[in-house]
Length: 96
Image (cartoon, rainbow, N blue to C red):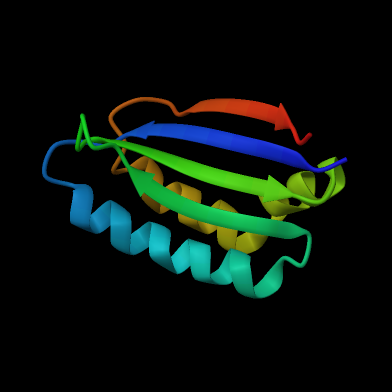
């Protein structure tokens, strides 16, 4: 069964462009290298420009686990951590 993820991220004031650029680089690598990733896309809130949601879907839980273990994901997380205002909120979902 496919698994969905919604990651909600709050970004520091004035860091939006840096965050979007860093995330775009990560998304390109995920989409190019992870066959088990159905989609991986960033969205900015219309009501709060400092809030972003990453919408993700993986074919299996193993694919999600593998995503978090990639070197490029771990490196990107270090860079993105300097731009966020708080820890992300991660919601896991079962596809229906």
